[in-house]
Image 1 (cartoon, rainbow, N blue to C red):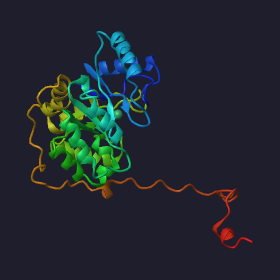
Image 2: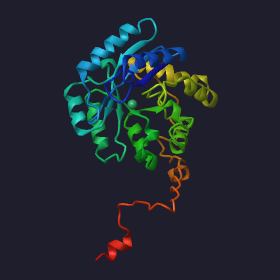
Image 3: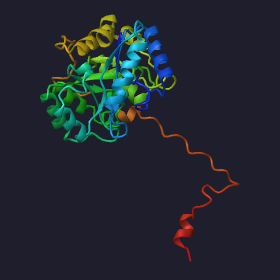
Image 4: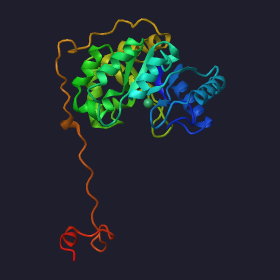
Length: 287
Ligand SMILES: [Fe+2]
């Protein structure tokens, strides 16, 4: 298997904090049967892409992991206007091993209508776009038809392995499973950040897909499609994406899968809820 989305490089984003943790994560991937990891540090306002230190630590990891697992370099490219212009000015710079396949992520709050134009500009600059974990964005959960628009424009789709079995909540689980059933997923990857709370578990996702859709599909999402992206090869023929071209709406309904809000904490009758704050009444009738 090949994991095309993995924050393996330590100390450059919210991934592993040190070399030891990076090595432990890489070894865990290797034990699962992953033969290559694509290192994808964030390129965002919160975690700017620092090419110098990233290249240095990538080389260090590659040396230390020689004979254990192969590494490629890419990034988790946040779709900001600034990043888009930077990527257009430096063709293929952020793509996997500089061969054209670019992993993109959206903001968590909203996806603006200008996004289609921005995607088109990147495609015109030579990038093949991979939308990472669409099932986890609230904006796409609310409007999954936007994903269909992106796909009809030629974007590929990468789903987080553990979304399929519920680690990112009911909505992400339901949406990712419907995408799987419709053949709308091209890659399964871990988006690993940390051995404990975001572990590099791809095997469980592979087995999940194999059981539900057959081994051939699991191999396509975890082996052959990732290999094509790494080589920058022509995109291999895929299973027909059900309902994409004839606009059959997804059955997914966010309201059905939204988590109920957590119960309000019980107030202790002995202590006021917020001792420093004035009550509505005292504010209304203050003297
Ligand atoms: Fe990521």
